[in-house]
Length: 230
Length: 230
DNA sequence: CGGTATATTGAGCGGGCTCAAGTGCGGTGG
DNA sequence: CCACCGCACTTGAGCCCGCTCAATATACCG
Image: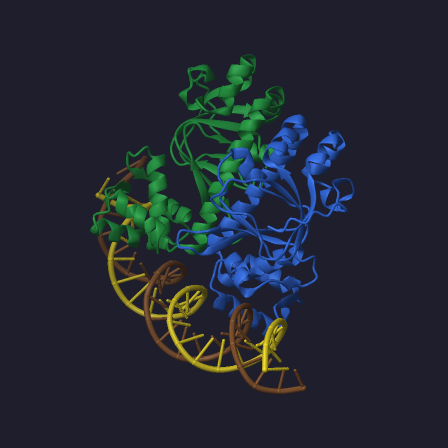
């Protein structure tokens, strides 16, 4: 773990917190913000959460992107979702008190803030509004997972790839998707080779542009259509 | 909707509530229990929740089983999970205030209790402990969905069928699984014919017994093994 | 006992997986 | 500056799982 704290990153001026739990805290109990460790830097390929371990605390992502994934019995990695600026990691497990069911690893250099497990629990107790927010977030996450499960069960690789590309375009702020083929495959739930072949087809059909590992969406309408059918 | 109320079903003597939210309520604010409509009877194939509509309130299942499912764009039904005695339906959507993302339909005759939307919200406000419990339940549901997504993405039909059978054996209290092949297929995420073929194989291998639509597990160890690999 | 829903079996095909070989690119060191 | 190396990416070939379509059998229900 890289542990360089950068105190120039603080909650009170952090745009990432606009809608977040820590923002609620900074309104209701600003004095509790001093429990937050700011501006911790993680290089790419660092683990923040590890499946099967106890969660140390909660991370709020300030910059950079991560993958949240599960390693199955057979050892294959299934990426559940991605996280970026403003996302809070670790609180789901913290509530239940169980060990982590997923891992979180940076796929870029990241800056994050951290709250110790017991401090976060104090925050929750002190500010009931946080619980409301957590409930809403969880309910929404669950709805997304239901959607994902249905898609995974019923749609072809092409269709799932298109869904993934639309989602990833958001993740990368419409600036071009920059993700390894392997991560893409582990997210879509297929083999790397299948992903590559489908991408080539889509490139030929002028739906996307590929330069190196960077994918840019050209024909969003067509991709949306394929994401829904077949 | 069949609306025969049966007042002999009451929360104070309902075993279904042992660990449930309404149990918490009956401890903390027993006077609010009068908001609950008891013993409503739904025949098999009745809809309690319908995807895309607003939720009317929360149902607590007293007896009988239901399927919770989503209809995809292509019209195919994906069963997300099943519900039985003690399960609470509808509260996830109620919290978020969005329209329902899933439907719930009885697959047997059911007896349920019902709480109006606004009454349930009052209960939550009156008894903060309910929120804690909801949070825990949601976090657990989410963990299960992550597991389900991973399995769906990575495992063969045989493996998924075995997982499903183990889960369904629980649902049917180890008394034999009594579910249509279509529902089984829509849960496993495959074609009905595939399910039937795999079941025949398993019958030949003495892993299960089939009489009519009823499936009984004979060799749990072998089925568990197949549920994990391939 | 007829009619309808459900379950089963068969045949054939194609999507997507696996294995294996080949290509491009960035970094590193001579 | 270029040769080399390692890694990620790409392409090819072949096979098998699981899907679809179609026919038949069985169970359920009036």
